Length: 526
Image 1 (tube, one colour):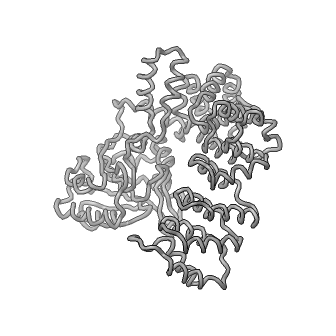
Image 2 (cartoon, rainbow, N blue to C red):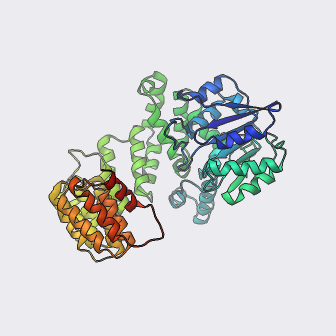
Image 3 (cartoon, rainbow, N blue to C red):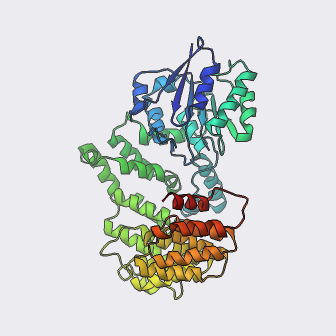
């Protein structure tokens, strides 16, 4: 008898169809999820359940975990937990004799790289002595091997499994996948299930929904070495001292290769318990890393040359965790990067987001950071950076850009306001008045969308926006205004009148049940 294991994080539709059509005297089903038990996967591993096929059902849009949108369920399945179980071989019953895995979730076998650092890698290879053409070739090889696509991770997790079914983009919801599976079983005997052979019929039925097929890695696969490296971070059989020794060895490789392991290095150093950092074995390895000046200098040189400011910040923060920088030096590196980008007119919304999201510090100011002299007159981006660092006199400049700036300036003002919201009724009133005076345009819609995130409480502003709704000549403008009002504290006595105005002045649209409808229902219910 074959065992079909199921991990039902969201919809049970797929599992139920398999159970309904497969002969009970030939297939038994085991649900691995134990509701209300957070360590359900570890529990299944300890029970030594041996699976011939595995069906995983759950949303998977972000690529980090299978999750549910059901209010009555809280279970989820982190990919890191699957990696740990696979690398540690602590779940041999579930993994060892699998013939096939069904991954019912969006992008589960998407081959597109989650991260790309090809330009940074190419420059690092040239700096280390490779001719440009050779650096280009090697950077492509590294990108292919370490692209960290969802497909790569699933192939690494389900090593040696002959057949992996999944989706290269959007997957059908359970209520759609169920009938498709029924058509499959009605057209076949179902004997292909857990056989380790690809079902052409199943793939053809799900092909319009982007189903694709892969196989787990084997020792002969070029990516087998990558899996061995990745497993060093999550193999429970290795002590933290052994894992850190691998980290030290990895930091001695070409920095282009170190860069592609940045996610793993960050996750591992962040997860290292403080108690483990104090053991003699761990202290010795951490000390060896901290005193490795060669690796430190190469690492920081790469960080300073990173294309994306967020990557530079991540690398310097990792350098601090490795003992290569003090907190003061990490902050100095951050200000140096921002000042350099200011000097090259390269400050955009990404840099503003980084500065504004950074925890405030008594020593973090435009003056101490050396940024005041680097700013350009009339630059909204530079003004936003300085405003987030405490230069309050530049705030008005950023807010004006929301209604009178270019598209790039508006984007920067939106980022700034996410971190530094409008303060008080007076500021809300001034900005709302400026938005209502704007000519009808996409820029006005974007400004209204920004206001929606501010949760207006100024009644004068709300009245003006309701008046603008009645005068609007586009559905997009009306919806944007409704987006502001639905989040606002609208006075109870005026709600009935507002609902009437919304219905009376609503422009015709082929779409229904949008934010305007939701607002009307809320006003009527109150």
